[in-house]
Figure (tube, rainbow, N blue to C red):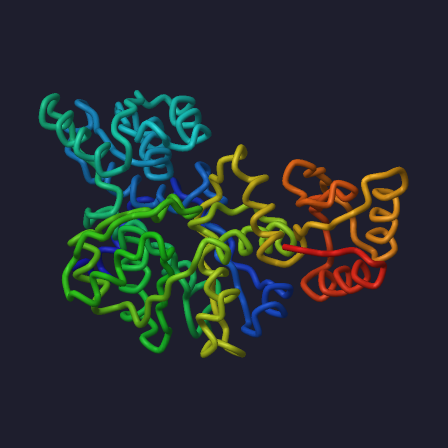
Length: 401
């Protein structure tokens, strides 16, 4: 178990090398959630995530010989970026093993930071196994992304900053993957401000801490694809779990729609592009998982901003669907001149914007005089969709799913 003294020592060690990110009040998110929301903007670190804190602390704890020989890390992205960046600053050779299907932006950025990249395995577990093999074969120090006391202590420095920047905080909501960040922040809170609730958020597709708490020991869960790829850890670490059981008050899970909607809300309301893992604290509010925090001062740790730009557009669309602002339905229209024009005019008069129209003649049924049109429209929300359907029905259109 790490202690407050470990975190305090880590803070002095990494001071000057880590950005003390802002923790600011968000009026729009407060209005949205009913809580008094403050956001710890750790995605503003140089490499886009909190992982720099633990990486730098672990690197500075190496012996001179270990620094000379170099280190190896395994990660789908953020830990790799943190180790690569601070290894470069400290003159330590870095090799990073990443899964073959790691986000391309993270692979590219790791290379740009000077790390030697090895793509191996279908997931982080396989990549980590290969990294351990390389460490043993080449005599390199292995820097674990979360199951390492120095890494956990480094992550905990965020908790010290939160207490200084939002001293009357009543709850902190933290994303959970391997359990290291919440272990570090929770250790600080329970030592310095035990009245503060420490709440973890996991994607339903990777609820490893939930399973570990139920079993009272780290246990392996089956992963499913998730927008919060940075939290896709099948088993929490032994070292962080020893602290988690003491310092975490509650853990909730969120589904993919809530994560997508949270990413969208942060873009629209906070002008912040946050990756799925970093958006999970807000997702917990949007999913109705934290009603007890209404009216209370809450810090959301927005701790990762490395979303794959190729995926961002798709995520926004999923968020719009979850928000009821992008809707799809089918309509039967007469297959003759003017039929489609009447449909589009009705949609326009209802105030909706046409995103896409597709004719479906082959599967329109036995009425050869009619054609089904698949419509995707932009609206202001679910009530607007209902009004649009009513307007179409009043105009004589047969509306289906």
